[in-house]
View 1 (cartoon, one colour):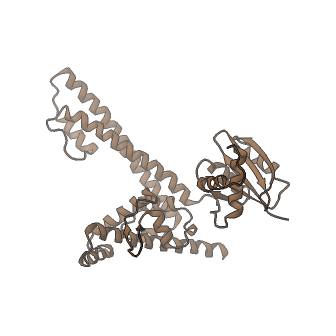
View 2: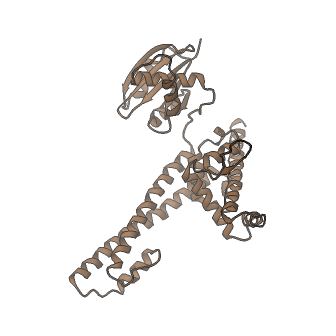
View 3: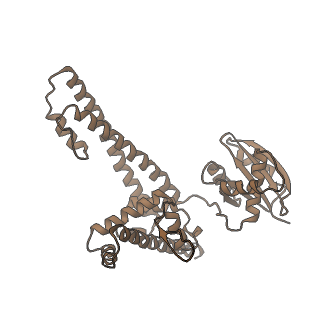
Amino acid sequence: MSTVVIGIDPHKASHTAVAVDERELPLGDVRVRASAVQTDQLLAWAQPWPQRTWAIENAAGLGYLLAQQLVTAGERVVDVQPKLAARVRLLASVASSKSDPHDARSVAIVALRSAGLPRVTVEDHAAVMKVWIRRRRHLTRLRTKVANQLHAVLCELVAGGFPREISAAQAAVVLESLRASTAADVARAELAGEILDDLRRVDLQLRELRKRLTAVVLASKTSVTSIFGVGPVIAATVLGITGDVTRFPNADHFAAYAGTAPVEVSSGPHRVFRLSRRGNRQLNHAIHMAAVTQIRNRPSQGRAYYERKLTEGKSPKMALRALKRRITNTLYDAMISDAQSRIRSAMS
């Protein structure tokens, strides 16, 4: 029996599915509401095609929940990037109006024509890390906002304000030494005290979150923490954002994803490379912090590599970029080794 591909155009309130055969001819379509029974309805509709593959547009975003539900039900699911489906619609031989069924069919056609689409798998430790890393990013932004508010109030109470990054303990000492002389200063001091309580609460949440990240990283039994400068937070960021590292054919592809690979801007016989502004910026920042940590510690191999690049005539920024690429390759090798170890353990 020939394989049937079912393309899904997911939305917040509903999902549209279209089944196509190997000749890209539609076999049927259905629209289901986004609800607790959405998976059961789709599986019941797809019973006539037991040899099926589900292709979901943006399975890591809007179609995330549906994709995970189908994978848990034992279905084969692949992720289709929205830009690929858009290209199919653009190159269609017959012009058609934009609609959910047409979008779903385009997604299915992409899955038929593309052999290297990433397959959706059941969530693992990386998914848990991604959840808590996102939470940490939100808390970090919130702490910056609260600290800025505290700085602004202290500038109205203390001559010169507080010139450096302030901690909750330092702010408490400053507030205890204040002697408010007017009703307005009393109000400002009370406001500063409330903001200080907010700062303490966010600091406590960040400390608890670091403990959670440490526990998840330990449970994953990853080897990336053996790399100098890669602690629990950086490890969780790298693993959570990377996900299945085997989707990258080699270290060069992973470096391009991380934005640590130079971009060629050659013209004619002249080969020129420039700094990449592409890639995942969160992953790039995590690698940057690991590189800075290595540079600050003279016994580290990263510091020796950085100094060797300087003696070769590289500028400090160029040497830092080279070190980031070196760390990227090391991270990739460690994650590939971990993935191979998991496969061997599953087969034994």
